[in-house]
Length: 333
Image 1 (cartoon, rainbow, N blue to C red):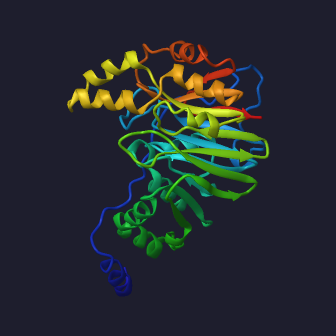
Image 2 (tube, rainbow, N blue to C red; image 1 turned 30 degrees about the vertical axis):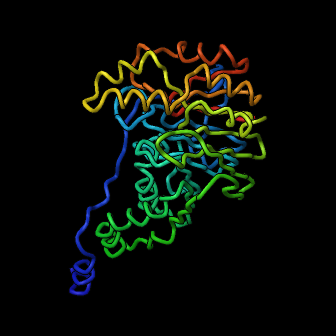
């Protein structure tokens, strides 16, 4: 190592090196319609035409385990990727779905719970080390700009040494974070208009649903929310509504295995999430074509079957109900 390089690295200061976080799962991507002969995803999703939803991780909460991964979604619009939420394993999930990480472009965080933002910085980092050289714009509630600065501080040694030793481009200006102080228009580019609405996820003040109006149809992501009739107005006429769900009979089982305040935990789960029945009511009032149930709470108990989730929603919603699986492919429009 040259003297100049030693001085350069020594001047960085102490800090943690970045970790490449990856989740290994055996789930297989399938057509959202579950019909034999349906078009398969291309090997490289950057070649994807039309608007297609991929449910990358479908289990609510930060706990890792079971057949489902932590929350993350991918919306491909004519080859342009829009990532919604970055739970642990999103990088591996996107790669397994067929998206090269150097093609990242837009990232949206619904709220600042760890199961939705834990891999936000690492997702961009994993794109950078696979030769991403174009800007990635991120949007989320107030705090995402500070989170971005904190990520660079945490990983300053690793980033600086890789720039010096490997000749990599400076990644700092490529990750462009935007705090969203309230609901409304988020952005409009690449033929897609994105808007947001406040959801009910106490005790957090800022939790957003996102609506993506694309040339091929509209997709709405509820984010985490208690039953919120206003979401039906926000999702009016959309093709697909991706809605979180909680299964109350499973909550007691979930609470039994925690060591923290059980009553407080149970209250949070029931007060901050939506039952399948109420998700069905929202979808019916909105007049959407397809309701995609995801962010399952609990999401790692095999005794809760797809039929149980679907039955509740079907009591009120007369359209198509999909009980999402990890990396499921759902065409839109």
